[in-house]
Image 1 (cartoon, rainbow, N blue to C red):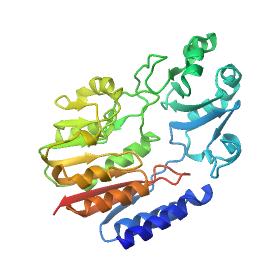
Image 2 (tube, helix red, strand yellow):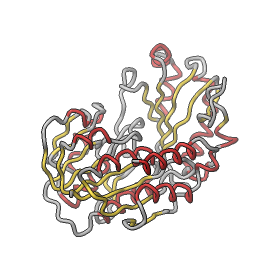
Image 3 (cartoon, rainbow, N blue to C red):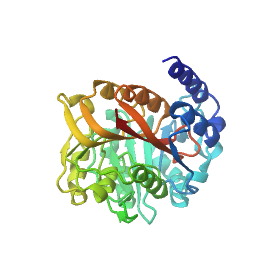
Amino acid sequence: MQKAFLIWCKLMAVLTRKPQFLSSWTHKRALAREILGDSTLLREATPDLAQDRGRFDLMLYKGRLGIRGPQKSSDAWDFDFNENFEVESLSVGLRTFIEEFQEKLPLLVPFFESAQIRFRFDGKATYGIWLDTKREFMDAFSKSEAFVNLKKEIHVELGHTFDFSTPIPHVWLPSFSCHNEELAVQSYVSSFSQPGPEANRALIACGLELLDEIAIHDWIEVGAGYGNLTAAYASLYSSPRWVLERESKDAKLFELNKRFFPEAEFYPRGVESISQNEKVDLLLADPPRSGFSDFFKKDLVQSRYVLLYNCDLRGLLKDSEALKAHYSLKKWSLVDVFPGTPYVEAITLWERQ
């Protein structure tokens, strides 16, 4: 417990330093090794992710685009995208889209005091944005001519629950089968997914490698999203018994993507809804940044193996401590799919003691 506390202190120290430090692959590797140890490390993957990212989140604040600054200040957004962000990880198409979109900002400024904007580029010729802010701003914009004109050019989604627009499913990011074939899973502009196709390919390949030569007959998934990992692992193990995903809007996407996992049942709820013991060969878990530590402590899914994806080292630390009560770490891999950020994807395989 003392070691976990010391690692937590180191994590907090790292995560409050300057962005240049946070982007260091060296420091992310070192912290992951402190949490998980060297003896079970299978692979550290640094795929060539230059110009890979097809999704990027920015903020519209007082008429300009920016990203959240490293320190709190009177200005909610401390620096401009163009001046301070390392753009090398963004795909050329996405970077061009963001630059050209700034010319359209005057159309939005009358309607938005501030807003979160998610930009997407599918790697071919399709662009999309998702805007989310106060309901009154969204309502006014959804009835405006500016909104109608914008929809003629790109996919536009408004609001977290789509109260103001009807989203159009699209293959923003392909999944990949166990044979490295592209799987055309559909998602929304607002859907969470990995930043780019090569990053997603690396994540899936490393996870499948961790499970190499392990017989899996019955599996379930928690934190399934729209089915990105579901489709990939179903190509190897057939459909999961069921999956959980808190976002109810993903239910429609799951049905659209069900041809990749036809026998799976989708439940639009979180892990806290599990109230009785389940026994399976594999639990595939892809939690939010905060992790699933409370769920793992309850030990309601008694699986032979747990394959866990963590994109935040703080979540990884908490999840690892919770899992150690009933599981031992078998092996793990690290994939730096978020260059220029403090985040890194750790994929860990746990075997029940």
